Amino acid sequence: MYVLFEESGKFLGGRILSEADTSMQVELESGKRVKLKSAHALLRFDQPAPAELLGAASALSREIDLDLAWEFAPEEEFTF
Image (cartoon, rainbow, N blue to C red; front, side, top):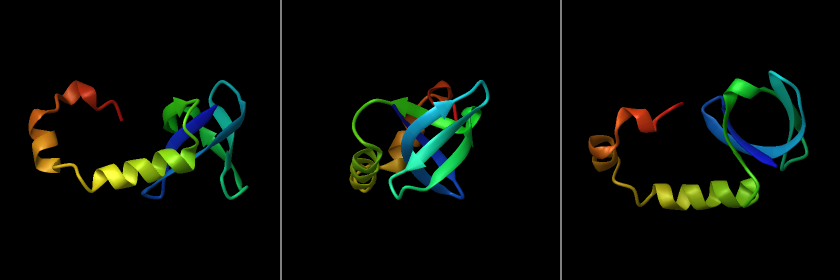
């Protein structure tokens, strides 16, 4: 299973190695391992791999009209 999280203003994704009640050990694509508070996990997913997800999100972000999205998106859609 994978996790998406934000660190220092950058979205990162990695494979969950282990998980406790309030934290998890995550391995990034670079091989670096980080300890992450479970509350900081934005999204957990099985597919696609984190690099593929972040690449697709980056490409899609260039096509989104942010002003229009903010105008129509209800506040309850944003839980983080």
